[in-house]
Length: 450
Image: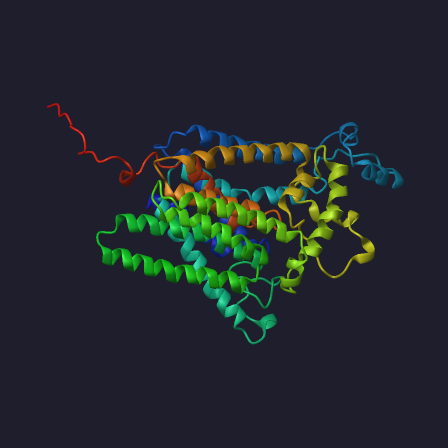
């Protein structure tokens, strides 16, 4: 039962954590997250942290510390010296009010609420790296079960006669007419689907390696083919162009999981994947996205408008940021008021720009530290002769999420954030070796001492 704790929790995150609109679902996940963290830290047989795990926890701890610092009230002499605070101080003077103590965050209540959303991914990290409360195969199966169930729900959503009145959509503000599954945003549903591809390949490779005969291998491959078709159908139903473009490199990288070490096609597949990523980036710079994107989603042209309005805000608040969760309030002062419509801009649709605005230079330094950590783990995992397919799949899945975050905000949901945390934990503690990849123990003389 210990090994089922984190897989069951991630499955619950997929079902309940698809949108910030699900207040009760978020509350349940946060309370359970606190319980998992406390249990993991108090369990007597805790695992010893490896160097990469300690570095990952250090980055996570500094992130939490940054949020706490953003909430600490500062005297007027300090907060007025922070760039970008002049309009606030002038407002108090115009009202004839004395300057109060204020925190770095311009929206402290939103910052505190956003800090609570870190509990699910932190619970997954602690549960996996400290308590070891998972099995890699169970973790993948839990994610795939959540994904396939979400695809089924998405099929019911798109088959509704009247999408606006369909009872299958779980949230009031959502992308009606396309498959969103357990999410409010179809792009986040597509992120779950694309993340499931390398995990499915890793599971199939492990099952095939353990198969006893050719008939079992054929059954596994047929099941894998059917599962892959379900994932591809789900991606098409979600109508997310970004993930459609991201699908080819993810599939190419994932295909290497079905090949043993030293196969000749492994290198060309990796090269083709890198080329396709470059092609995807070039496609974003052309009118193609705006010609193909669904009308009920934020177009890439709209994204570029949001980004152009966000850059001046970043420049004004780059020193310490405006506080996590403050984007909506701050953006309203910088957007083109003559072009304002009924469309509600809730995020920058580029998580890196939003992090730069809300956390400033300290947040960007943490982001750089995280990318250095991710690269330092991904390279040896891919180059290791003792292949841990689940760790390789975790690097592909987490990389896909990081790339998708350039044009969206998938990590703002508990579902994707918990899966990302699981991938990072697996990258921090991969298997040292696989029995099938080691040399035959009977190939050399052995000595027995009695």
